[in-house]
Length: 103
Image (cartoon, rainbow, N blue to C red):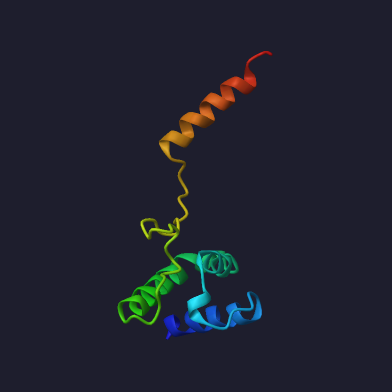
């Protein structure tokens, strides 16, 4: 039941907030905007939406999976990562050292 409620909430959001009345018009930005309305429910909602769009594509109901970020379909919507990545930490460390260095 929770999955259907999520799809209903997305449909209402699309009509009311994004002025879209067809699933074929949904894009990644719409999904991101919907997910940002309830940050605590992002993980569950994204899982449900991925399942729905995967099913709709497999049944040829939709041509595009709006939970994929890349135009070639090679990249999914990013999941929030609470830990900084090693490369990001290295860049941040260099920036911190440069900020502390006398000019």
